[in-house]
Image (tube, rainbow, N blue to C red; front, side, top):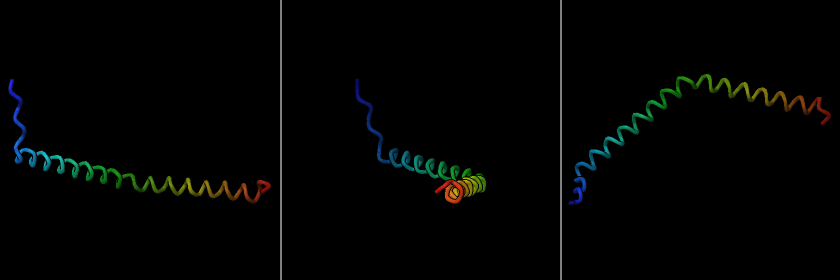
Length: 65
């Protein structure tokens, strides 16, 4: 049996271009999804930060130090 011949430089270049294009499309899609949920993510982060600050203040002033 003969070994299959390796791909030519043109085939490797074409595959590399397709992989790069696929990576660009995946990043674009991920950014689009992130932009849709960014407001909610920021809101949740602010709420968690305010709750942590409130718990810390409560422990400091009324928790017996």
